[in-house]
Length: 252
Ligand code: FPP
Image (cartoon, rainbow, N blue to C red; front, side, top):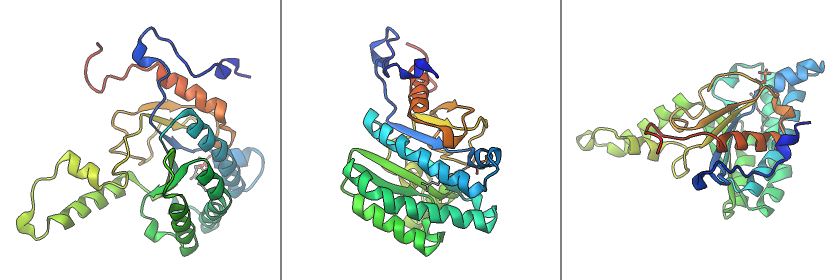
């Protein structure tokens, strides 16, 4: 038992600016479902099912702590290359998750949004997403942002093409700017992540939020995603609170 993880989320570093600093936006790469299942002699789909169970308390804890945006990587543009049976199981789990959890998320003030190209998802998944977004669109406590058929490179290409579409006819074309790109990303209007958490020990970004993670603090734990729990989340936030964020500048 990590008793330290039970401490309140207050780190007094002597610098008042760092007192009780909760990240506004946390992004999570929920990795390790397959290994978790394999270790137990189960199907990979069972690992994903356990992954969904792990996500539920993390969403609640994040809202409770005052996190404003929680973005979770649920399906990447590269995940289509997995066996069809695993891909289908993931969509079934998404539909089930949204059906069961949306009313409770709504009652807790959570708004469901997505990033990624959801037009390419099976229609049952699209329907569930549309319904969950519609049901929760007035909630303001926290955004639960599901990355579905998401890839950072794909998002950047789509953003630039959206911007180019607005520039047409070509005579109105101009040079693209950083703010023009940011305003055409799927995450437009959301703050950039302050903290990226990756479970299962891999030291990669895996095509996640390539633009938005520019100055995120990275926290990697060896814990496999189905074993990740609110105590681990607090541990990650405490590590974040002790980081010295300089955004390319100098320490004061
Ligand atoms: C990576 O683990 C995880 C995924 C590709 C999917 C993550 C999905 C969930 C946690 C459940 C779905 C979420 C919702 C919102 C319904 P992996 O399979 O690559 O693990 P491995 O590296 O151990 O094989």
